[in-house]
Length: 426
Ligand code: PMP
Image (cartoon, rainbow, N blue to C red; front, side, top):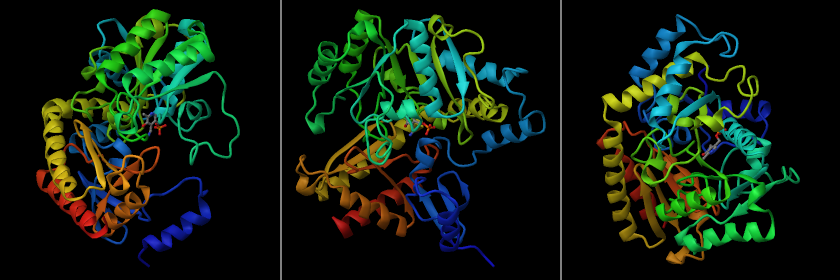
């Protein structure tokens, strides 16, 4: 009997805890570049990219070819037991790509949360301090420490009680919600006055463009003042580039556009085109602060994921994907602004490269986030064959994370479907 989405959802509901949410009631069967086919044979345009993992699209032939070749050679030794060259080569290439005019080293792990956990461990060891400052609306993961950094209770940490201590929250500068760069810096100064001395803070962690929080771009001037504040107090600056990295924003890392370098950078998601790889890159002296044996993991830097990452970086060069990223961003922003011109519910269209969002407000009033309409549009778009995601502290942001390798025709079809949804629902 052929399988249906409904029959599989029944099995899923019985076998998988409800805490593992599911945005679309669809079971994927196969995919190619920006298209996904479900178990019933229906095709969808994928504007979600597995949440920012598929900048190079589904099943890119160069990446799949590299993994297939590696499959015939070696799939696991555990790097701490027997090393292998692709791990070292990924680290060399990341060291060269991460901004910062200093010697760097890179650690590989498996998930974004694990990368953030390790960045915090390294910052603690390097500074001898334990405090950390994170921002409102931040998302850094679902493990216990990263949940503490993540600035959203529901659905991530509600019901879990108090999270690890030593985490202080500053305001993320966010013009649409009335938080200026000055306000954001003042909120850090307030932490130093009210909560913790700077000499107890190991690190400030920030997403250069907030991902789950709503695709807000940190102003360059803010990043520069943050850097100066960190230098003044001996605090490490951690850039969490898990969502922004691997070419999403028009540069390989978003910090390249900020005019200052972080001490530690976390990356994951699109770096290995769908294979599980993440890591921390940073100043060599900080990265070496932890003694041998203190970093690593059984699967960390798996050989298949490493060759996939090398192939991703090769594809970026061969296909000039950073240039393509800008073109994709411009095409989509132009199309979305045309939709905005007809619908005042769209308060803002914003983008850095191809990291693009629409923020919806009732009657265009910035005090009334419109999450209900976002939910309706995500569902209607799916019915029309377009997979979209929402985000934002208030759930009122639609985000686009389409593969950068998507053809113009696919981008235009997606835009047309989004326009139809607004015409029908807004
Ligand atoms: N940091 C950021 C900025 C993220 O966007 C995410 C995932 N959405 C994470 C960390 C956590 O990554 P993972 O889900 O791979 O643990």
